[in-house]
Amino acid sequence: MDISWFEFFLFALATFRLTRLLVYDTITAFIRSPFHEVVEEVLPDGTIEEYLKIKGKGLRKWIGELLSCYWCTGIWCSIFLFSCYFFLPRLTEPLVVVLAIAGCAAIIETIIHKLLY
Image 1 (cartoon, one colour):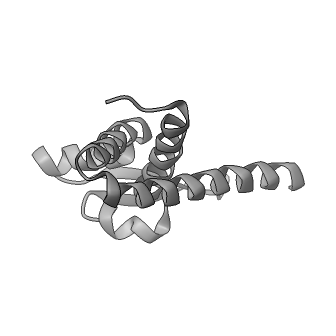
Image 2 (spheres, rainbow, N blue to C red):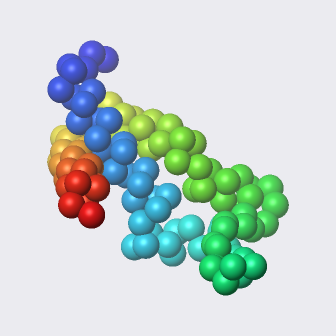
């Protein structure tokens, strides 16, 4: 299957946004919570440091590690999006476009935030 550079760019932005949604966004914490535990540690200077502890063993641990790794989740998100597009293009196109727009908006917002603050 041939895709154009424009489609490649859309998929890249869509994969970026879907990956961030799964790995970092608060709204999807319920997906990560069976596999992750956030542990807080008070440092000697009084600041609190949070770190992630993967729960379980076997498949549960594997999924927890997957959801804690941006690179790993990104690969699976790209496989998911491209496979859906390959088998169900009419249903997947709107999803890819919406995720790509959201990804682009997130990048713009991050740049503006860094410039202003």
